Amino acid sequence: MAASTHTVTNQAPPLVGYDVFTSDRALVEGVERHLDPALLDSARDELALLGRSAGSAQAQRWGDQANENPPVLHTHDRYGNRIDEVDFHPAWHRLLGKAVSAGLTTAWSRPGGHVRRAAGFLVWTQAEGGHGCPVSMTHAAVPALRTDPALAAEWEPRLTSTVYDEGLRPASQKAGVLFGMGMTEKQGGSDVRANTTRAQALAEDGTYALTGHKWFCSAPMSDGFLVLAQAGQGLTCFLVPRVLEDGSRNVFAIQRLKDKLGNKSNASSEVEFDGTWARRVGDEGRGVRTIIGMVAATRLDCVIGSAALMRQAVVQAVHHATYREAFGGKLVDKPLMRNVLADLALESEAATTLALRLAAAYDDGSEQELAFLRLAVPAAKYWVTKRCTPLVGEALECLGGNGYVEESGMPRLLREAPLNSIWEGSGNVQALDVLRALQREPLALNAFLQEVGAARGADHRLDGAIKGLLTELADLDGIEARARRLVERMALVLQGSLLVRYAPAEVADAFCASRLGGDWGAAFGTLPHSLDLTSVVARATPEL
Figure 1 (tube, rainbow, N blue to C red):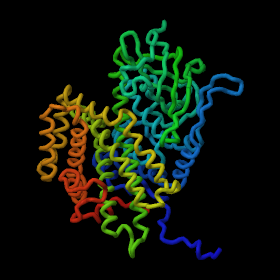
Figure 2 (figure 1 turned 120 degrees about the vertical axis):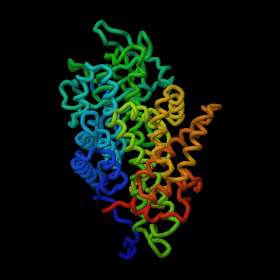
Figure 3 (figure 1 turned 45 degrees about the vertical axis):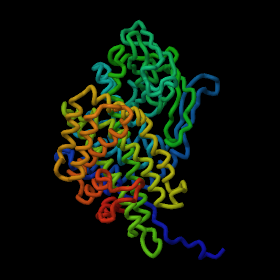
Figure 4 (figure 1 turned 120 degrees about the horizontal axis):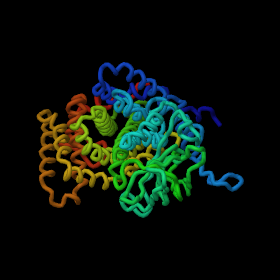
């Protein structure tokens, strides 16, 4: 063959060796906005260190390896003994180890911990999304355990450790532990009150034997699980350790691993309990109330995780268009491609800005901020996770055929994109949760309206959208059938308010014109041509 036919031209260089954190202006500004100035220098240093790791060739290789070599279930050993173990590729353990050592499970134990952790989770998820599941559940288990001070004192130091200590051993013998949870059952799905797993009280106070089947239990090699089961007084929350204190294995029969669309590196399983030892968390009959803190925290992580996938997809698209030439010039300089990239960048920045605002509310912890979270978290979870899949699909298209090839990494992002919209309650569950809060918790609506109203008068399109939202809220007829429409409007108004207050003028103007002012089509790349789209794209461009 002639050597000239193998000359490679007009291809973008690999997007590798860059700082995922520092090159994300919206994320950096969010951290600076919400953190105490006394914490900023150390936070920036740790996040930049994590950002360089996330953008490194090594982390990208770990992500590829963890997904190309999915976990393998071993139900029995060679002699026929039941072991119920899942083997992971070493890359999975390296990803998890980095996440834990970077403090992604320590938010509850340090000042500004939720903002710092949210930023870190957004950065490190861009290296690989699947391993974030046990990281998220470990982080989120803390508020549920705090309903029982004795349990919290025992387990919280292990959950918030920065040591990743793999392997099945009694938790008391480990420097750090990971947690999972099991709520979903095949007969009930999201309707956890229909669960049939039974809890029989044992002689020792607060201990039970569980019998039942959990349809989805992710990260089954974790050290402990929060699960729901029916006790004498109704649905109750329990802590199920994987290994008992005497070193014996708890009954935790893994029936199979799910063959999922994406999230291939993470093991999602079906498990059976048959006399499984458990310790009650909270009072009998108050299982949902006990575990709701964990659910809310994991829902926020769905928002952060989707924001991370969006950002990585946008970065790949902008990077490709910056170097790729077509029809006599760089793609990024073509007006139509610039419109597409700017539209994607707007969606990504709005998601990131909202995620950081929610994390800051957790750090604040005041009654006002907690009331705000009650509405803002399910609304954000509904909308941001729904926007992830179309955004990633459009970003993939920006790379053309190159984006459709596995080596680009874009197909893995696309397969991962629907995940966060489904886990921790799908779209309808989130919309109904918003309605429940509106009907039962007036402080939540007041807090939400105060937040969006902080930008009133700054943009006429935002003002009009707030007025329209108030009209929607005043009309409760047929509210369930139009719940998605209402929650979408709430999320967009909240994002618009945040961008008007905090983003550059060109970003806020483009968002309000399109998402709130109606000057937008049904697909990405339909922004008004008169906007400053060049500046929007430049802001989203990564620096190598």
